[in-house]
Image: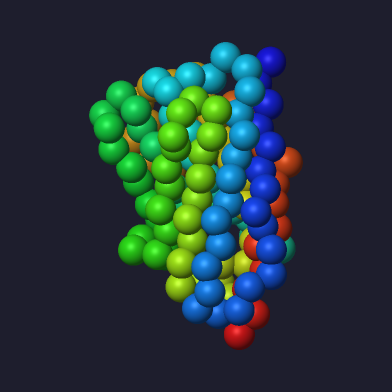
Length: 124
């Protein structure tokens, strides 16, 4: 079965940087969509960044565009490089994977495999 384990979450000062990592096991390969989502206390989970291998495209939420970068170096590792952090980025961050090869937005619906999350806290 598919398993995803996130790491790298921490407390940071505004303007700082963090790099989140996700180790993927199971049948997910480089042709499958992978993504990062986040959920702040009292709010719904939202899409942050996604890789769509079928189209070779990446997608970012407007709130993180130009600051965050999603990448993968193989089917087993997914990263989220976060720079210029601000308190609005405080949330639990989740790594996710889909059986789909084509993903077109940051909707949760294609993603059926989820990690347990890693906490990011940004202070002013």
